[in-house]
Image (cartoon, rainbow, N blue to C red; front, side, top):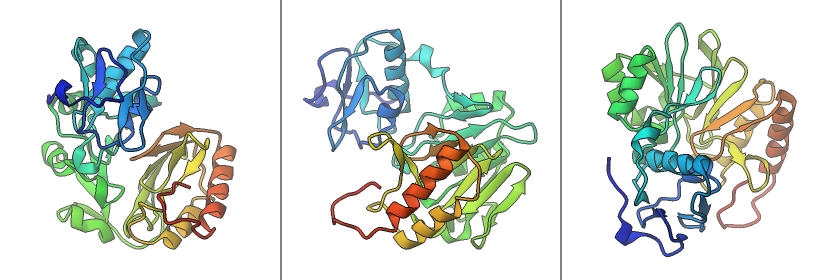
Length: 298
């Protein structure tokens, strides 16, 4: 595993065992995994506080392992005992894979264990640890790709496990040999309990996956904004059509879910009623005209 370079550590780091070097792309995963240790300078992550206990040290090591560009380093800690934390359970049979890929700009991916075939949502790095863990858990049957940005090493996983990749035809350029192509804008349930909802906007072919009317895997469509304590979407990172993304957001109002599990941004759980209210609030905000040309997260 590639190591961070202590000689290239950022000056903002608090002195101590852990540090962030200049390769950081500010994907935010370290702040999601170890919020007590890592902060945001606006341009990159940095160590704002060295771990104060065993829990924070383990969280910092999890962030080190998940970092897509190996920008997090530790001078004294052994990461090997923490490798087994991944895939990291979220709830029920849903887990966060870790080992985020630079090819997906550091996007998160998820694993769903299911008796009729396991699912991978977007792709982590193709690494021996995850390959062995997936094999132990029964392999992969489907690889759902939310959109063209977060495909990463999905082809390698599909080849190894003889899994079928699912992507919308409008984003097929990123996975031209995908086995299952989605078409149109109507929701589709390829497998009972797994509902795919096309939500064009961030990209033309963006889709989300609703599992068991509880888990919504959202790719880059929406995420939880901890600063505002609300759901958010990125106007400045909308590559296709913001008005279309707004309409797509409104399409989610009839659906029931408790978890938002994004590719980029923070995960969050609320009640079905809270999530519906949050989506409604976000839709109304997205309909407002932009007030600035500066980077804005709604």
